[in-house]
Image (spheres, chains in turn brown, red):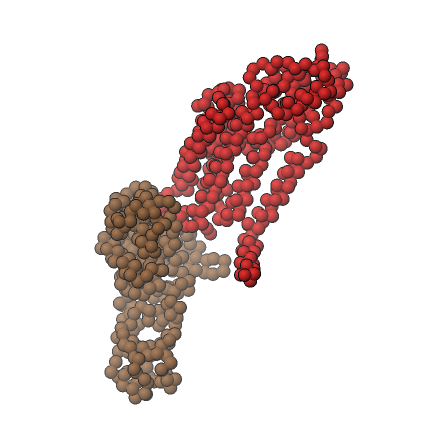
Length: 296
Length: 335
């Protein structure tokens, strides 16, 4: 494990009567980076992050924060945004943040947090009368109220509309600029690619790939991907010497020789009017590694 | 419409049947009520009236009033104690048969009024004796019990359901991710509820007291002390129920299981004088009985701190036991 590791996870296992949710996961999160846990629903991301947060006891294995088991120091220095959280009712936005500020010895001024999360205009509003995006910003404000050194975000933008999601990403970027360590779970590849310096891809409780997103893509993919609608792709063309990936509605061809591949396709009379050419992304990587689509 | 109704009916039945703790509880609660009602009200018919009997000479056994049905006769040692029992409505009438029929009755007591009529019908020569000291009207006797019962419901249901709701909607889980400890959380709940209950009880005490022209014989400061320690004990009892469970039905059932016997057996509505010894012993275990006993002693008899110290110690000890058990068995999240 690296010397500068902020959080280390050693051989975590979480067993439930019917299922092994986390099956021997180990990784280290260096100080000051955004670390992404990626995977489809049920991959074990939330279980892993909740064990790391000290909320859920593991069946075996351990989590260390700055070289020590999770303890009072960790609770003072961690900020957490759960997937689902209800707040105490009949409180305003400001009172909700102030409640949590009162639970920590050190932290930011309530107004400063409200300002940081663009909640200053909503400070006196009942916390039940917020939109999805505003609600999520309030929960982020609560997670930031102790000025945490390490911040956990469990699928923070699931269920938000694209505009609210983009706003949230901007917020996370501004938090990253404060040199916080962030652990993020998501099934939005775009989110991970945009925010994370390092990712671990999970499937069925195990990590199947780990590293910086660009390096993982370079390792697994040639330069570009060609996409063709599945129904326009002749069965005979499957025998061509090309690297094909089956997605649900399309066939993808991975290549570092675009001219050559196009020539091959044209010679085989594959219709190219709906052809799309794009660089590979994490979604493709997941499909490549598991044979499954991430949001299936 | 019928199809939609049946779909929802069927789904709800499945939910209910598969929620094992709830199912078990729903079956056990009525059974428990039946058994306890059987114990309390079963056996020979309970007497309607309790009459204290002074001096039991052989000559008195033939007195016609002693053969009245539905009347229980309890021996009373001396006259002063007997009169106090009458003024406090623990007995309905005090009777002395040696040297002519003499009796003492609380003219404010409805049951005293009726049993007096029965006595005069049986023995027209019976002479009423003046009751020394102020007689306690029934409403005054009832007042401490009603205040305490209101406190009990507020204590038990007020915290039980709130903690359950916090657990179900994930608010407790969020708090668990902070430095807050279970003991701190529970103590905060207790203190918040305590403030509310003391305020409400004070308003009721002043308001109802003005309507029924009630004045406490004893110290009001002692009453506040009883209310505070009594509330603490009953709030902590409510927390023992809410500490762990995640089902409204189980928590509701347990709270009912606690409040019902307390409501009937703590002497809110009628004195436990004359009920079987073991019923009285069980009743004394309830915090509500201790609160009512102490409050009546102060409000009606002007008792001092010495008389109610055992009650206060019992309530303080149960508070600590209940709080410790709650903190030990506390669950932040639904497993």
